[in-house]
Every structure is written in structure tokens, then in C-alpha cells.
Length: 359
Ligand SMILES: *Cc1c(COP(=O)(O)O)cnc(C)c1O
Image (cartoon, rainbow, N blue to C red; front, side):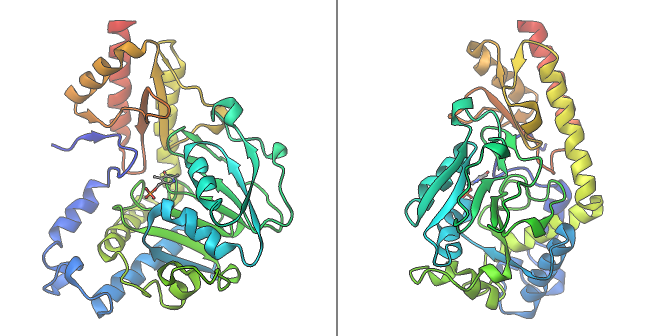
């Protein structure tokens, strides 16, 4: 039996994708090989790779002057790889601090450049996105970095901030492909695959081509965007099985109707859960309503002494991974693309029942 899996990541994948991967596991399309046994330079894998890139480009309507790179190292790796590649001879970059993942990015970037924290919601305990009007941007910054969706705190940008001529860089690890994005408004978008689009080990980078080619000389070759772009992400062996699974997920999203359909699906699930949490005093979510994440919904029980019992009851109903991150406490339901509406219905039914018993 499949669990109703609220894991923040690695997270649930569409069952149809897993079944297709199982079908093709030992013999991909009559090749006599599993995808993980193929040369990345062979015609079979080159076709898988090209199709995955084409489908991702179609889903996000990525303009032709953007490179799509399939890399390794995760978003935490990108925290270093971004400044190495994107400083372009400049000395500093602006970072917006909206929570735990922003903090990690800021700390890592500090090893490579002068970091200007242009705005922070630390004083609000990271329950909101710092309002754009409060940002103290440096016109000479190499880029402005945001975390588009704070997976731990459950705060998300619902607009694309205007940063003028300075390129906007976004960590979209936990909301990429959850809804349409105007890629042209970003200089660079990156994210690990394991939240919303595939297995851990694959990192997606989408970067405007005029911003690459000026990596710092100490940049490892495997992490040089220009080298990777010039060799179709095959300067080193790419995470081939991860690219294959992500490719199946891209096809699945297309079959669901693309990113507008995903947005409708995700808004419907999030509304069901937030509306219930707001409707009573037994549960609470402290995030500013305008900035609430559609993907990660942290919530607290009125009495934290009931947390363990709550999780036990959830597990008995086949609902797993609801424990909140230690930085925030309480609970967190991650409801990425692959979470069906019925999964959120089951959660809300349980929330109601538990509140009735203990309220
Ligand atoms: C999960 C996550 C990360 C870390 O990803 P790794 O794959 O562990 O490097 C970074 N940023 C955000 C927003 C995340 O959700």
C-alpha cells in the first residue's frame, strides 16, 4: 500500500511515473539495458536527455537565450556554485533573507563574496517575505538572490520581484514546476530535483546565456556553467537515472495539462488545508496570508504536548512525514504536485477528528 506521503523531500513522485520506471527498469525500450547501465554518450541516453530538456523548455516556456543545465551538487552545492559563476568580476551580491534556506545561501556565499543582506524578515520570525519596498539593493551587486519558496518556514513569493538591471537569482528547489514562471524575469533559476520533480542527485539550472563564461578561475570545472553549457551538461557524467526519472515527471505534468493545470491543482489543495487550519483555534499557521506557501504548510497544535499522539494517529491512517522541521517545530504538510487532492482531504478529515477528540 502506498503511503500518503507528506515528506518535504525527497518527496512523493507520481505513481504513474514509478510504474513506468518499473516497467522499463531492466530493459529500456528494447535496448536491453536499464537507463542506469547506459553510456551517457550512447544514442539511447542522448535521446532521453534531449527529450527531458525539450519537455522542461516547453513546460516553462524557457526563452531560447537561456541554457538548461542538468548538474549535481544540489541546491546547497549551488549556494557556492552561484557566486563562483555569477560574480563576473564584481565583488558583492544582494541576498534577501526570508528563512532557513536563505540563511544557508547567505552563509555559503560569504565565503566567496561580499554579501549584502538587502532585506530580512528575521524580526518577524520569518513568517513573511520582506516587503519589496523595504529592500536596500546595491546597484553594483552582481545579482540579487532570493529563495522563492522557504520549504521549512512555508513562505513563498507570489510575485516576481523587480530588481532592475541586476539579475535576479532564485532558489526554486521546492516550487519549481508547481506553477508557471516568467523565466525571462530571472537571470538564473536553480533547484534540487527531489522536492517536486525527481530523485535526489539531479540539480536543475536555468541561466541566461549572457551571464555565463566569466566564472572565477578557481571554479571546479564540473561546476562551471559555461563548460557545462558547451558540453550539453556532459562535461562530467551527468546524473543519468535522475534525468530519466525527471523526464518522466515532465511528461506526466504535460499530460496533466501543464503548469497552469498544476497551479490550479496546487491552489485547490492548499486552500482546503489553510481554510481548515484558519477555521478553528486548535491549529495555527503563523505565516502572513499573502505569503503562504502552496507547497509546504507548517502548522502547530494548540498544545504541543499532543504532538507525538497526533503523529501516531496520522501514521495509523497511513499518513507519514508530518513532523515539522526542528527549526520551526510542530507539524508540516508538504503537498507538492504529486500529492493528490484526496491526500489533503484525508489529512483535513484527520485534523478535524483529532481536534474534536482533544479540543
Ligand atoms: C531542500 C532545499 C535545499 C537543499 O537541497 P540539497 O539538495 O540538500 O542541496 C535548498 N533550498 C531549498 C529551498 C530547499 O527546499
